[in-house]
Image (cartoon, rainbow, N blue to C red):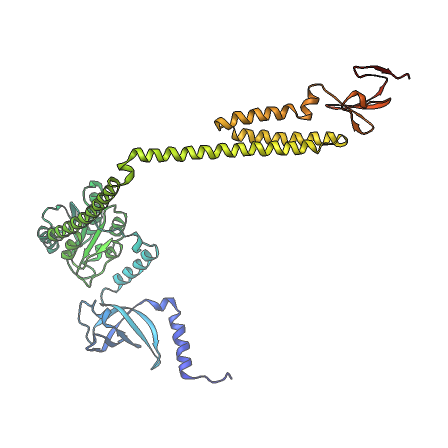
Length: 449
């Protein structure tokens, strides 16, 4: 046998099982009321029973306010409730949300079933509901021409907004022809496209009398309407599917007319408020612009434009001098570097020196390209670059000249030569030659082979 547990643990376990059952979270139950008592708080406690069983039930004040009759012992009712357990006593009881007198059980069950289906499809979602226009020019009214609803809506509209036009579509609001007529009127209003908002409704009544506003054809017409719809079906305690799918639900037809319009006085106050706000904004902007104009008008530059232009010219001249000095400095630096490189030339690595000087020459040439836009430094640098190129060893070789080397020494004049082999270096290579005869301008010496 399992270890014994506390009564409270059993109660909590059973309560969790009941609360976790989705079927028991909203269920319609038919039964007879007994031991009914309404307390000063507004909460109602009673027992719901049939021939074989009974259950305790409670209806809190916020839900009891929706009752359209006074429950008494012996009355058969249909309730929509949640089944759970009251932990203190361990009693399983009904927490009632809605209550209607029996005789309408089948309709009420259809109503609850369809309501759950439409809610699951998102037809009641707040995000799909449209706001009502602030200043409608024409309001469409769909209701019975004989009922009090039309009189209440029209009277309220004439009082609050006599300037608003009305389009009226007379329909039956109960009976077999009611639902198709209401749906057809909603579609007709949408085809006209001149109404800014629709009021669809009727006065109060039983669930059977209001049933047309639970029919699919009416609910779908409201859902498909391009014009915002105010549902005003019944009194404050009456709810239909049309109320849930409409953009706005009004407790009464009179309340619907009030929701659809703002009074002339309210509109006048809105205009005055907006006018004051606009005046403040314009005044602030004008003051800011006036202050800015004054600052500009009193600025030194505006008062003395010649002085301002002179300052600009002076800064430009200084910039031009700095630019010229910079270019001259770069050319001088390049000349010094080239002179130092020329002193380090050695005949033994002359070709390497040639290549190095050629690379440096290309660098100078690139620098020259960058400073060519400068007018005066450009000409000076071009002359220096021309000189540099004319003394380049590679340029000398390219023009057809050669260098003579004997015994590892660069031969500068004919007197340095002696009998033997010499190396003659060209632009693209070298050749070996033998000295047979020398002529230095004074005498000719011949070497016999």
